[in-house]
Length: 374
View: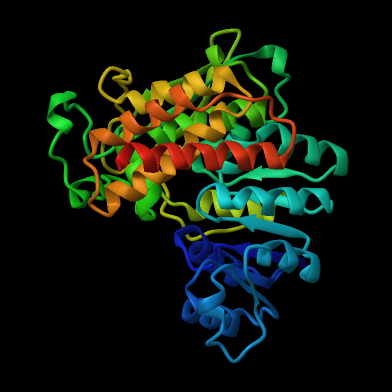
């Protein structure tokens, strides 16, 4: 029996993880955490029997009649108390970094859906994993696909990794045509159903930039050997290009339960009721280059990754603040990129020496965005 903690249990990834866990008798959900959805957390706890609960929002926790950890250190205390075999970190944003570190430092395997952990604090996260021997299992569909494509392939036989992007709802538009985009239009993703923040990131292609940084951290390849290609059908999730010219691809209909299941049940691959690709009707797979001139957030992410140190943390924090402002109707869609670029140009880059350094860079980037909006 594998004992699992799910952080971000009431979000899109968390609820699908609960569905996957319910289908497998050898997965026991022992701990659950959410940011502020108290009702959703309690409902999930009753359905799973999870005894360890946490809410980051202390005010939301106060109205519950069950024992629940709350406050800024709630996730760390939850991990300490529950002592699971695996933690699924599906927290949104940089807030998930401390939980990832707490998991790995205790020698607990980490199923990582919080890409910001590797973006903002990648060197710290990898060091914690090396020291404890705990595994990092990517849950993002692209990185799960890359892991499976690579298999036991030695790195010296690998030419590059290829990450696919749907192109988002504005694929094919010019830069001028992005002005006037509404929140509703940006949230209408053509192939994936996701939370609001990641959906906006997909529309700007910032999500793909964060995934490039994550791939660099997970697989140890330099940035010039990580490719991004637009693939509107979202059927090919990732590819490994080998040095002899062969290309190994991972295919499947868009369904986040597939990479979630792979991470939760690893090293086994369990049965899942996912829709298989069928050959009884024709379908096509289209690929096209990324338009970096129009979608500059991807370019900014690549540049921040190359710069290293705290630059990716600044990028991520500035983007979180800019996306929140766009969702609140305070800025326009093109201003997301402009605000991130401004923060990268004004916040000094420091070596990634500690969690406190990451926090300082994060705070400085958020302050810069707030100042620029004001």
